[in-house]
Length: 286
Length: 257
Image (cartoon, rainbow over all chains, first blue to last red; front, side, top):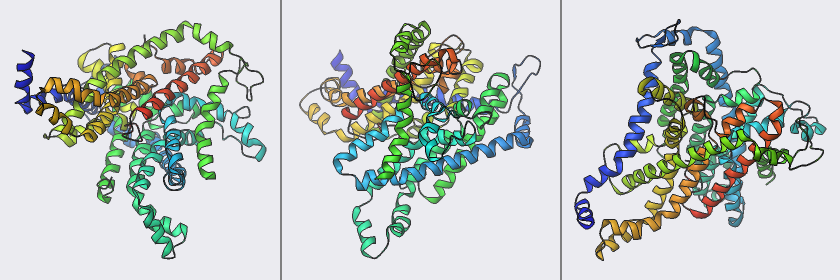
């Protein structure tokens, strides 16, 4: 019996494929994509201001409110500014670190360094932000204790704290793709550039940077997308500052359709970003 | 060299502070710690709220990992061994839950549960949410291994007269096992400390460990115990990555990319 099932299956690759695909497709397409689709539709609904129930009637009111209210425009611009700063800081830290890991460290140490950079990627997100709360606590925090003597003080809780915290969170996401890109880059290219008289910085700007550009883009997709939706960092170390995620979170329980409308912004920004990146052709060479 | 050192210090100082602080004898936050104690560890272990949260986290993590293993592995088989319509789309779709902001996934699922299906939030909805973003790590680990394995071993087994089921049991599965174990560990680690999607899918009755921390973060009286739980989460997340690194040499990122 068992044998005959095995034989029957073996002769029918289509059936095997269908059996393999059924559950994951059902889950990802119907459950996940379906939920995202339903959220998008909800963005066009309103709520009954009396009962708080969602009224399924198509209208553009939420989008109109979102685009015309200067308060929301400020939140969008502020969040974008934070996302850009975080991405730049991550890149500034990540490029030299990845370069050291891929090209300067001995092969034996390379693996250890990768593991060292990788491990905190899996450490609890909440704990990392909590850690920065103890780091940045004004006067009694760890940062004032370490850097106070050389005249650097904690910026306190607010915009700069959010930028530090988020850069910390997403740094490994930036290091790893750049490391992978640099690892693929042959050393002979760097030697050739040097032999032809280029100084280190010139080699970096004209040889390395163009070749690792796709990796930078891959890393920035994470740093950008994750920053646009974050609300917990702002709640814990942001003081009174609000990001897009906070607006979504606050509206979630009182006005779900409006929360859905706001949630389309990070998705839309990411879609535009992906489209721009596609046009530069960086994705094709990833 | 020095930049690497500064970078690593930037990565590790905050995490070490959390671990050291869990032994800080001071009841309120004070740095540097004047004396060290293990008192808070004892108190945290006997704290009923923490214990309950731990059991919810374990239940959610184990169930989500189980589902992710089933779905991720079958998807990896389909993508590595067959050609089909929509293959590119499905391999993009599997990454989407961890590349979109958690708040989007969270409210989308919550909206679907509450408004569309009428499923009340609880452990089941947490598990569905977690499994959705855990599939990708199992999938990536399994896919990398399947690609490296090739099909020649299976073909040899079938040529020698084994049927599909026997080949799977004696050849494919043992070769795949360590990649699946690594993927499963990472999926569990991902689920164990997730907070955003959990916040939206948990409903009022259930606290996982991260949610417990979050709810007690601004209560000064609970600060020492929060430190202990936070330190535990750091240590627990380091073990899976260490083990999975040793088990699977397929990728540097452990399948998160």
